[in-house]
Image 1 (tube, rainbow, N blue to C red):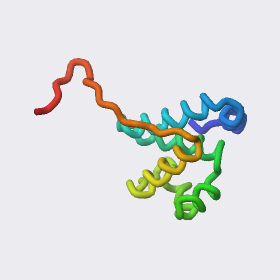
Image 2: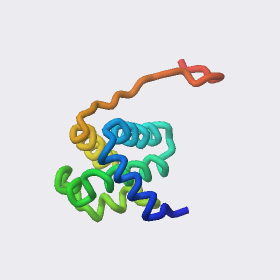
Image 3: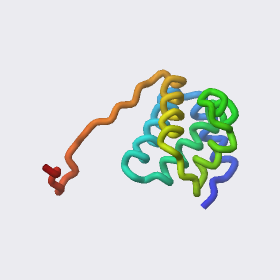
Image 4: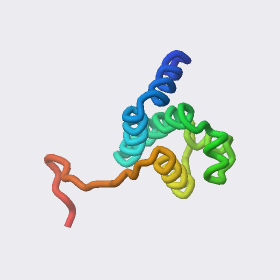
Length: 113
């Protein structure tokens, strides 16, 4: 289901006014990617990018054409790791945060030896 323009504007307004929401949205997008939910992660990051730097500004910052970034974060996009990590690195720096990966045991599953 496509998001309505009003919803996207609401997200953009909240991102601009609420620094904690801005950080939480970026974290949620990266968390989704790390959990293997690539489609949700790309969608959340696309909303984050649209609400903050925009694809033109991001493209200039990371050296990737804006159209390539739009495709990369689109529903059928398949981002290269190099480009994806460059984007995440830039978004962290721009937001003033450093996301870190932590390990935790998934209940009911044993860790491989």
